[in-house]
Structure formats: structure tokens, C-alpha cells
Amino acid sequence: MRSILLDVMRIPVDDPVAFTFFTGYMAMMAAAVFFLFERGTVADKWKTSLLISGLITGIASVHYYYMRDYYVSTHETPVALRYIDWTLTVPLMVIEFYLLVRAAGAKIALLWKLILAAVFMLVCGYIGEAFTDGSMSHSMIWGSLSTLGYLYILYTAWLGEVAQLAAKTDSVAVQKGVRALAWFILVGWAIYPIGYMAMPGGLLGSNGGLGILNAHSLDLIYNIGDAINKIGFGLVVYGIARSESAVKVAPSSAASVV
Image 1 (tube, helix red, strand yellow):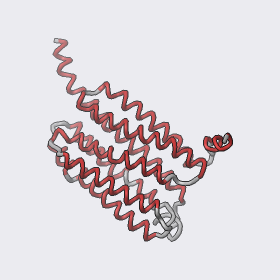
Image 2: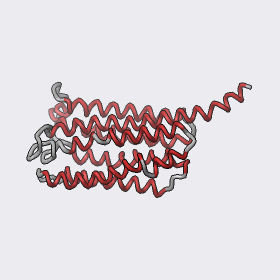
Image 3: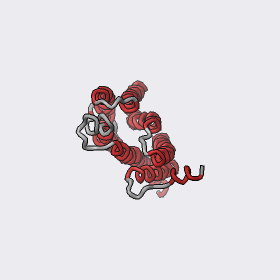
Image 4: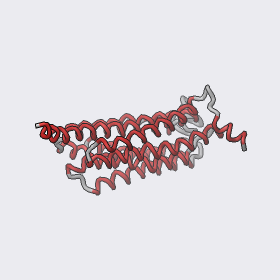
């Protein structure tokens, strides 16, 4: 038992995947603590948004704690743990869009459409990755289906209901924030398909693919994508909350001085 524990906690100096699992765990935990503590510095209407940001990074840090040990001990991809994490955190990320535009008249139907699109995207991705037979046809079919959910969220953020509601708000901070989160969906989330295509049978992987990336590239790309998107999402929301809270506090502060 002692030797197993030592193997689990050993980080190979030449293994960037293990390194990103450990740093990802610490970064997510630090971000969760930051967002939860900072809830006390923003107006009440923004506390829920920061709570969700803290939950996203907090849930991710717990999963990274287990994924790092799993990877270091087995050198295999923790597919199940990865998708459990995403099934919890990605719907929370799209909820942030709803919370930002709720004041502009967003209906609860928008929230459920975004959540269902995120879940559909993840379920198809999981089937394509967890039940792969090593063939490119399997990965491409389920990867293409997963992309449909992604494209719906992307469209909603850039041109659809979220974008239209954001344009109606009087808050410049909310408008810029929604656009920043939309850029995360467009650019940041585009990192994940690259990792997906690195698996055996994927377009960029082995077993009929181009062979540009190996199986370990998948975890490296996923880890980098998680850190950028989950922490980045939270920081954008935090920036909006602080900016809007300052606007609300400034008039009352001036009045008290007078």
C-alpha cells in the first residue's frame, strides 16, 4: 500500500501532462477560494454569479485532485472523471450567460435550452471518446453530433438570444462581458475538439488519423483548455460584478460625503 501511494504522488519531471494535472488542481482551487471570498465585495445581484464561478472552479479542482492521481498511477486518460467534471461545470458555465442577461428580460426557457445544448454536446462527446473502437468513423460521427450542441451555444452567444438581450441592456460592462464570454466559447472551447481528435481513431491521432498528436496530447490539451476557460469565465464575471457594483455604490458614497 505504501509503494502504491508513493507512485501516485510522484510527478515525472519529463511528463508535462502530469505537471498540468497538478498545476490545474492548484489553480482551480485557488480560483474557487478567490471567487467565493470576493462575493462579499460585490452587490447582492452579482453574488449568485460569483457563487457559480466558485462552484465551477471548486468542482473542477476536486476532479483534478482525483484525475492527477489516476493519471500518475496508470498513465491512462481519466475519461469518466473528466466527463463527470464537465457534466457538472459546463452547464454552470452557460448559466452565467443567463444570469448576465436576466435583467434584460431573459426567460427561463433560454436557461434550459443552453443547459440541454451543453448536456447534448457532452453526452455525444463521451460516447465518442469512452466507447471508441479505434476507428475514425466512430469518433467523427459522435464528434460531429457533439459539435451541433456547441454550435447552438456559439450562435446564441454571438447572434442569438443572449447577444440580442445583451444589446438591450444599459450596462456597458454587461455588454462587454457577454462579448468576452462569447469569445471564450468561440476560441477557448475550440481547444477541446483538438484534444478529442488526438485520441486513437481521431483525425489527428493514430489508428488511421494523421498521426500528428498522440494519446497523451489529449489530456495536455484538455487540461490547458480547462484552466483557460473555467478560470477565465470566472474572471470575466468577476470583472463585470466589480464594475457594476462600483457604479451602484458611487452615488450613495457621494451623497454620504455631502
